[in-house]
Each structure stands twice: as C-alpha cells, then as structure tokens.
Length: 380
Ligand SMILES: Cc1cc2nc3c(=O)[nH]c(=O)nc-3n(C[C@H](O)[C@H](O)[C@H](O)COP(=O)(O)OP(=O)(O)OC[C@H]3O[C@@H](n4cnc5c(N)ncnc54)[C@H](O)[C@@H]3O)c2cc1C
Image 1 (cartoon, rainbow, N blue to C red):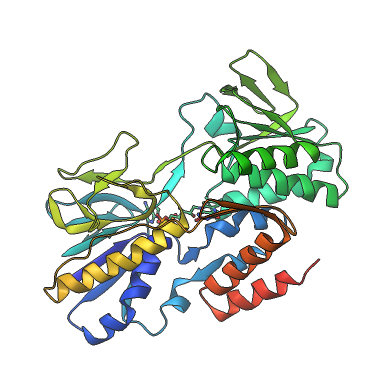
Image 2 (image 1 turned 90 degrees about the horizontal axis):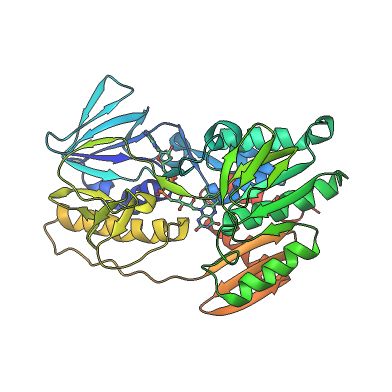
C-alpha cells in the first residue's frame, strides 16, 4: 500500500512526523514524499533572511536529515499532474508515481491578480531564492542611483512586518535616502487583526518614517515605477509584492470541488470531494463548513488531525473531526518589538517579542536549527 505526500512544507512534513511512530510498525505502508526541493522551508523566517538577521540555512532543514530514521522514499521533482481517477502523479514531466492514498499539501504561491508588469518587475515573497534576490538587492541599494523608494504592496501581516524590518535594516546600514512606502487597498492595514493592533501598527510604522497609502489599488508596475488607481505614479521605485496568494496546484484530473479562490474544498476529515483516499491540507484547502486561516499555525494543527485520520483508516477505526482553535498572531516589527493578538488580547513590545523568539526556538525541527536560533537570540 503506497501513501504519497505531495509537498513537504508545513502540512506535508508535520503529517509525516505525526505518522512516524505508527509507520515504524507498519512495514506494509510505503511512504513517498515528493517535493520540488530537497528541504523543508520554515517560511515565517524568510523576512529575517532578507534583513540579514539569520543565514538562509537556518530556515531550511534537509529532508534526508529530518527523516533520517524513517523508511521513506524521497523524490525531488516538480509535480505537473495529479490524476485522481487513475491514482497517479506525473513528476518532472515523465515519471509516473502511483498511489493508494494521497495527501496534497502543495502550499500557495504569489497572486498578482493580473496587474500588468507585477509578475515581471516586482520581488515576490515566497521562496528562498526570491528572498536571497531581495536581500542582495537591498544590501546593494546604495549603488543604485535610479532608485530612491521601496514600495511594499499589501498591508497584511507579511507586508507590514517586511516593510518595518527593511526600514530598520536600511537605517542600520545607514541608507537613509531610501524611502519605504506601504500600499494597501483596504481602509486599514492588518484588517484581520482587530482595530487596536491595526491602529498601533499604523502609528508605529508612520512614526518610523514609513509612508502608508490606504485605499489605493495598483494598476501597473514597471521596472522602476508603480501606477495607482488614483492616477498617481510613484517613480524611482522598486516594488515588493505581498498582496496575495493563490493555491499552488498543478493540473488535477478528477471530479473534485474548488472554491472561488481555487482552493480544494475538503470535509473536516481532510478528504476531497468524491475521493475518500485523497486528502489535502494547508494553504491549498478550504473547509466546506468552517473558516481556517492560511498559516503555518493552522497547517501544523491540521497535520496532527490528518495523521490521526490516516492511522484510523489504516486500522479501520472511526475518523476524527477537525476542530480549529486559533492561538493568536504575532507581528514582529523590529528587534524587541512585536505586536501580538492573543485570544482577543493585544500586547506590544518586548514581552511578545520574547514570546515570539521562544516559540520559534521551541518549534525548531532540529537541534542545529534550534541552536542557530538561540545564538541569533543573543545577537544585538
Ligand atoms: C514570507 C512568509 C511569512 C510567513 N509567516 C508566517 C507566520 O509568521 N506565521 C504563520 O502561521 N504563517 C506564516 N506564513 C504562512 C505559512 O508559511 C503557510 O501558511 C504554510 O507554509 C502553509 O503550509 P503548506 O504545507 O500548505 O505549504 P508550504 O509550507 O508552502 O509547503 C508547500 C510545499 O510544496 C512544495 N511544492 C509546491 N509546488 C510543488 C510542485 N508543483 N511540485 C513539487 N513540490 C511542490 C513546496 O516546495 C513546499 O515544500 C508565512 C508565509 C510566507 C510566504
């Protein structure tokens, strides 16, 4: 019996880790992980790479190392097709991998919403390579005479924390001539986080010199400019796009259901419609009856339930209904300053920052990663 995990991010990796003990006793189950990379990427650390707070190898853990004592087949390649009817995937355009059970956990990718020039001319914020490109660009900004602004598009958590961290980084390297602008199409930044967090972060960014444009939509991006729906053009600017994501799905043959954002609709056992042997979790899904945010936090919780349900299927037990509990959100804005929204209570400053650091250290997947994060903790 073959169980294939398509995608080794938060959803896929934590599903495997939760199955670890069980699979040691079930030699009849062949486990296969397919990913385009040979490592797990801890995405919440990506902005720390951009501003040079951590090296890129701290944010990754090689699958080989992570699953060292497991009987798992690791396949590196791009999944181009999933056929649910005939139970196979096509990897790297030619390799056919069959499955009895499939977990789809392919995450999300940048959504440019068709804005002309956005894909071609802006930095996106999703992969390690993109982060390295952005880091190298920012670190060498003083040599770029044609640019005096960095424009971050998207006032969600990613855009806000990135704008803030880059702003402090530029000050640290004494590059004050670069102005940071944050553009949000809604009435306020961090609209999902409650008024107090939203207002306080707005004040924090403004006081620190970041210009915020609210209720402005981007209509075009060029090599060194951005055009807004108001007709304004911001020139001598390089753009960082954080405004949206869409599910990262290859062609799927099968009669499953998608929502209007293109996410796979699953029931609370993570089964996709019409295929009881096919499961999905993380950023690619939407539940038919509850709302769960697209986050690492949610994917890790989902993975725990999904692994339990896979065990239940393999032992012919009843499936367990997923229940989501949102612990809260932390938005790091600079060293020693984090905005937190936990169980409806809001905190700002050093204590949430400490909590944020400790969570990452505890959550590290290997001792090497943990040790690097502890070292980073004491770096001033
Ligand atoms: C910059 C950034 C910061 C974030 N910060 C936070 C945070 O602070 N807190 C939080 O809770 N969430 C955060 N998130 C969101 C969080 O990272 C995602 O919600 C989470 O990673 C979703 O898990 P996943 O398993 O669905 O996808 P991912 O973790 O993205 O994993 C998808 C995997 O699929 C692989 N893959 C994709 N397509 C293919 C293909 N065609 N073939 C083969 N392999 C493929 C990828 O290589 C990847 O390993 C952040 C995201 C980003 C981009």
